[in-house]
Structures are given as C-alpha cells and as structure tokens.
Image (cartoon, rainbow, N blue to C red; front, side, top):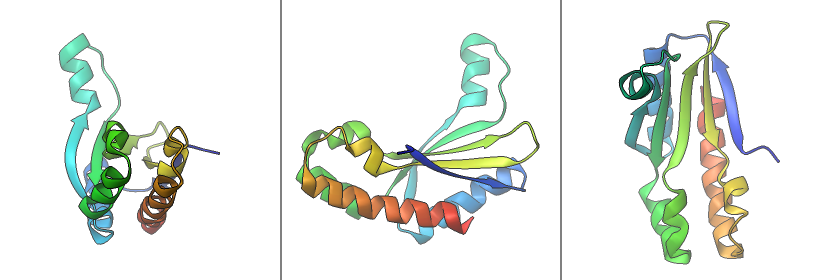
Length: 128
C-alpha cells in the first residue's frame, strides 16, 4: 500500500498552490498551516532547495470525528499535502493517504473515518 496520492500538473508553482487550495476548499478542507521548505532550509542551514511547500489541510468536521474516536490521533493531524517543483518543469501534488497512516492505530471506527478522509483527499488530487 502506498502512503500518498500524487499527480503532476503543468502549471507554475503559485498557480498550483491556488488550484490545490481551491480543490481542498471544495471538499471542506482549509489550510491551517503552511511550511515553505525552500525558504526554511535556506534560512536555517543555508542550502538551496527546489520550491516545496507543505500544506496542512484540515476538514474540521472529520477532524472532530477522528478526535472523538481516538484522542491521540491529533499526533497525525493535519493531513499534509505537498506541492513541489520537479526537475522536468512540472509541479507535483501529493497528499497523504490517511488509511495507510492510521493502520498504526488498532481502532476499526477510526479506520472508517480515515477511509472517508481518503476519499475526499483522493478526489482533490484527481480533480487537479
């Protein structure tokens, strides 16, 4: 089982961020955190890195459901979506597969919630 879904886009980086943000919004997710890996690596260890952004996506209703089932599941939230520039000039968008990550937790009720989140995130990636 793979732990993510991915799709390549023929857009510039900022356009890809906008498109991903809108696709997430359409599925009830908001961006609650953004990590600019390129900028952080430059500032912290003075290395050059390709454009690479980690978007922390959260669907509040589904997060509440998961937290109500398993209070430590917050260690795995939010759902990360990566937008990165590839060597071939395309932009790749990859989203975590929550079913794969939740296999570490032996709770069948949580597995059902994770499957619902996976369906939404897969729909986001497929829609790009």
